[in-house]
Amino acid sequence: MFMVLKGVIFDLDGVITDTAEFHFRAWQDLGEKIAIPFDREFNEKLKGISRMDSLERILEHGGKNNAYTIEEKEALAKEKNDDYVELIKEITPADILPGVKKFLDDCLAAGLKLGLASASKNGPAILENLGLTDYFEIVVDPASLANGKPDPEIFLKGAEMLGLTPAECVGVEDAEAGVESINGAGMFSVGVGTADSMKEADMFVENTADLDLEAIIKAHSGK
Picture 1 (tube, rainbow, N blue to C red):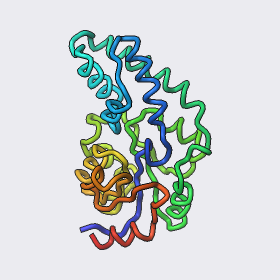
Picture 2: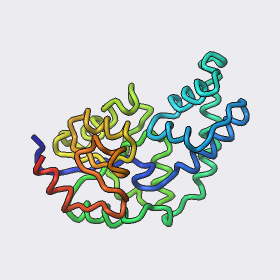
Picture 3: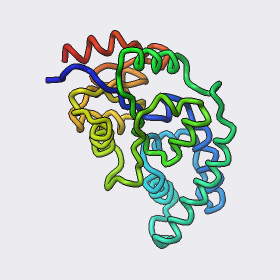
């Protein structure tokens, strides 16, 4: 049974801002270099998972699972990230997704603690570029975790860092792996996406503009 809502833990990509295009461009550049072309449809399979797991899926897609040593894979992942870091310098507060700023304001006005649980190691830099750093009490460092999403570790860690139990928190995600992670943590899940992709979420909205704190509190308390 869920307790009184005290915290909200957010994914980043697709929930607060959309960096998918920057990831796609950086992965595509790397793919071209290692002769593994892929399209936007395949890129959707990389949504919500870590950098190294994404690289493994790309190598498998190109039939090059065993073509690189661990050290070479780490170098490729770093190259992709360096490219991505340059691209996200273009992000500004104008790139905050619709309705998110108001939702964050409503959460703080209600006295809720806010945390970020993103697979991206660049979360703090992106929050700074968006002008949202001060909203978040904690940011989980994905490098400190043993397992990536869909494992629940990142959301469990987020609740712990906020000093709350999972039952006192809501997790907000746009990826199926992320929703699985929230549910596995014993946390109330709010999905952003289609009814089909978010079918495992406790509640969902089609767009970030539809995030409504009162509705979430009501659904959470009734679960």
